[in-house]
Image 1 (tube, rainbow, N blue to C red):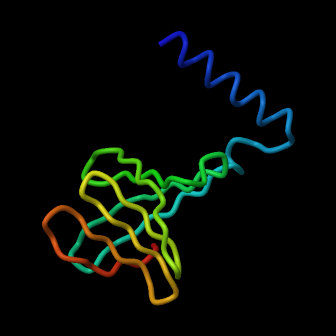
Image 2 (cartoon, rainbow, N blue to C red):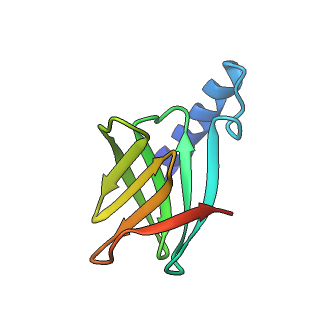
Amino acid sequence: MKRLITFSAAACAVLAASGVSPVAAQTFQSFICADGARFTAAFLKYDPKQVHLQIDGKAVALKKRFTLTGERYTGRGITLTMNKKGTLLRHGKRGPTACTAT
């Protein structure tokens, strides 16, 4: 626990020294899906190859995957696809569902 606090303080100090506040280094977006699912996605500037989701009361990190159009993230049975047509969430054995930002 002490190491985590020390690491967090050091990370904030580095961001502050670089002129970027920790709040500006991240973007949070909430979504609601057609099937009633809700989730929050965190896009972190210092970690561009992942998106961090808060879904079903759990935190899940999804890795960015190759796609020709838009962005696709997968991990732990969850796929999040974002492109010009919209946002799709595939969660567990459920089929794909359209989601909109709130």
